[in-house]
Image (cartoon, rainbow, N blue to C red; front, side, top):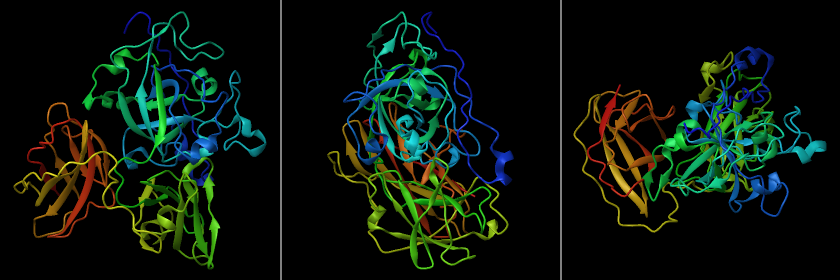
Amino acid sequence: MSPTEHHPPRPPRRASRPLPAVLAALLGAALVCALTMVPAPAATPGGGRASARGQSAAAAADVTGNATHFDGLGQPYGGCGMPQSELETQDFVALNVFDTPGDYATYPRPVPPDQASRIGAWDNGHNCGRWVRVTIGDYCTGTNDGAPGQPFCRNGVWTADSYDGATLTMLVADSCADANAWCRDDPNHLDLATASLNRFTQDGVPVTGLPDHWNNRHVSWSYVPAPGYTGDIRIGFLQGAQRWWPAVSVSHLPNGVHGVQYLADGVWHDAQMDGDMGQAFVLAPTSSGGTDFAVRVKDASDAYLFGGREYDFSLPASCSGSCGPAYTAVTYTTQGGDTPPTTPPTTPPTTPPTTPPTTPPGTGGCTATVHVSNSWPGGYQADVTVLNSGTKPVGSWAVRLALPSGTAIATVWNAAVDSSAPPATVRNAAYNGTVPAGGSTTFGMTLSGTSQDLGLPVCSAS
């Protein structure tokens, strides 16, 4: 750490968790923020605070702000109403709940309409589930500690260095309401997951040493569509959900979520958001006292997702009393609307796909085949098919990839990177671990780097 870097402790973040009283005891554990933080400018294009809902409605031009970082989401949920283990990526950010320069008082959440001028980029949860492309900016040579009422980068200057221009696409998953200058004075402040600092790339190559050259740097960022989106949304019941309090979270969204509607007695109704946890909503069954549900979703542009596609599902038997886990995934059927994409949109220039050879069977009766389906300068997309080559169903699977030097996994869908396992080990998601004998499932990922030689993946199942 250089003599000019200052890393004071941040107060604990305690995001609103407006669940029933029966859950109150479960929501005591709050996220403790990291000791290091990053400064950025508080100017918003056009002057003043940009309309939060305006930012929600469409991807805007890049804004520049201070960047801090924090260790992880609170328990059992982050500010958006999703457990960290169920996020589609571990590269996530928190947005400011309030925009109250010079005012560090506590205000109600969600921010009521008569206090709308205090609403920050969080927009009462309406930017949850969206993606932002973050670009590293200048470094502060002075004191940048986020002290209330003090300027950023005191007794120093902002200066460019070798990390400027490194980028990473990240998911909005949490909120920042702390009483410091970062979370109150800077409307464009971003709080980044600490582990993500090691996954920024420049020209497709991961940067190294960024956490040691932080001092709450400037970053610029803007909303972008979900990278390489395929498949469909995920739905899961929250902890404590039951017949009379059917609360769910929706995730794996192509462009965030502004609302959920449920069908009850033949009429569509707007679901109530659970506080300002923007991906969590309280439903009603299709018939009074029942356990069957039908929903449709509106995205960040207030358009119906996939043309108003209807998702039909039931309260799982495991939740007959109430749901015990933080998240209980459900399977659903669909009707109407449009078919979600099965391959990501081709925005970057494509190259002819290459198909590495199928690997020999791994342990546990499964094999994995990798297919590079899209590429662009500095990165590419790979789709992986996991085949149960045994004679019995498997309940879980994992694929280990030998990534070339300079190559890193950027995003994954229909699976999750296991950070506790050897590098580049990808495990099934909660909803696709079970594969019948002779059956298969797929997951996809985008990678940064130029080499597409992923070698022979090793698949294991149990």
